[in-house]
Structures are given as structure tokens and as C-alpha cells.
Length: 68
Image (cartoon, rainbow, N blue to C red; front, side, top):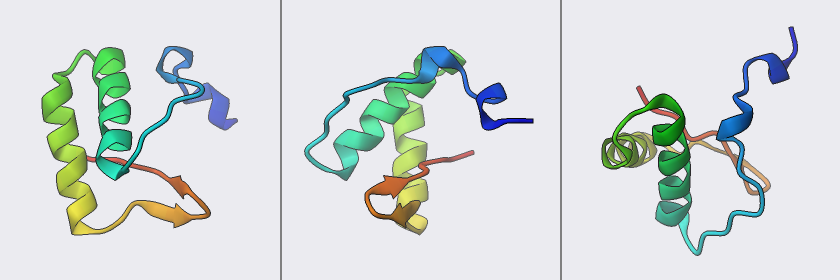
């Protein structure tokens, strides 16, 4: 299997900008909510809560934000 088999092309957004971590998480939440048919506010809250428990950053400006 390749990672591309797991990705939803509709959930990929190019050339997104954010001034801070919260704005970046909001962009992720909006995309995830649209793709998964969830409430964007609830997704953002879950991402922020997860990030407070420990950073999802892996270094060099790369992160893998996630939540239950």
C-alpha cells in the first residue's frame, strides 16, 4: 500500500497560509470537517486540546495535527 491510497484528494489544500498555530489548526479543522461531515468548531476544539497535551510537530515546520 502507498500513502496516497489513504488520502482523500478533496481534503488536500495547497498554498494555505496561517499567521500562527491556532490559525493553522483552524485551516486543518475546516478541511477535515468538510471532508468528514463534522462540525468545524468541534474539530478545532479537539485539535487544540490535543495540541495542549503535547505538540504534534515533528520538526522543520512539519506537523501531523490529529485528535480523536
